[in-house]
Length: 165
Length: 165
DNA sequence: GCTAAAACCTTTGATAGCTAATGATCGGCG
DNA sequence: CGCCGATCATTAGCTATCAAAGGTTTTAGC
Image (cartoon, rainbow over all chains, first blue to last red; front, side, top):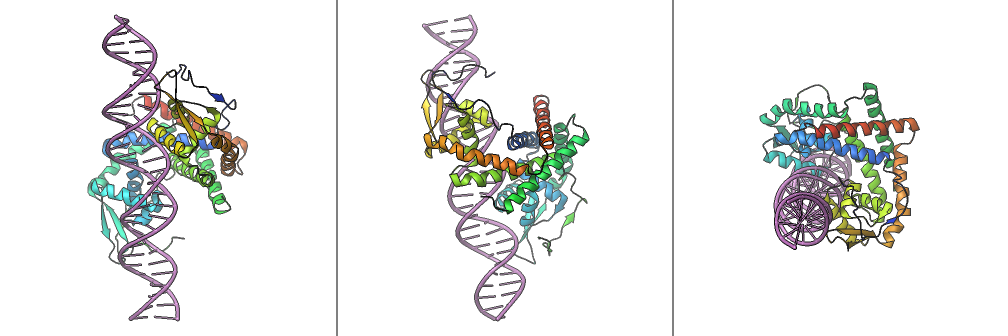
């Protein structure tokens, strides 16, 4: 596959001789993220769940009735993203949104019964993705991976607070 | 921060007692990816480059005159993504698209002079992101991280080929 | 040499995500 | 009370991404 001459008639200019940073941590993380995302997607799609809904479902399975702000924090998304995801979930009958009686700025999001029942079907899918991803890796290596990734995030969080730009 | 009662008037149902998988490899990789993506974005934005253009610039700095198919492979994006990204880059005067004389199905993408000159400004930004991300990590730990991520990707690629469904 | 398959690019239509600006409500303080 | 700043949600407008389907050109097989 792909091996043929693909550029006859177009002059190429080879500027350097190797990929200097296809080996960078950034690239590694990016590609791994895509692979994981895709693996999750194919497993939840048969249940009519999109990746965009997944993290909100996770949060609500954990604690039902959260506000949109709280959901944004737990899912790690910006608030407009949360708004549109929740609308989609409402249309699909996964959640109901109720206005908070004590503070009418807030809404509380509750799972419907079918959405609660999806938990037992979907959490195993997530576990399966992680199992597949870590097959053949000793537990120590997985722990080391998580520890290192945590350090990387901490590094980026502090440079961000200091003088990025 | 964030510690106040935020749900007065909305009944919450605590369904389980802990985050069973906020510790999963999937979550770790997802959040790290976001942090890296964001760090890169703030550094290239001042030059008028969006993250969507970045990987194509990288590929073309490496080898100019690639076809769109080749660019898709190197950037790791689907072809429609490549089409729209290149149109945006053309509008910004970063690339010109020429029809291949020997094979009229193909187009070859060439960087403009300003885009070539951006290389010396932007590559240091990418290096800086990686440097920031790995500050304080011994080289052996970084190598281990990359090795493990590579294994994870390999795992996912094979389960994909087999019976994902 | 003709036709069918493959290769390449594009369009269409959908999801996901962000920043910035707007709207609505609440709370504190004078 | 009454206003003003903070808080919560939404809208507007943009970038990024993909799968599926379509159009054109080339290649391969007979």
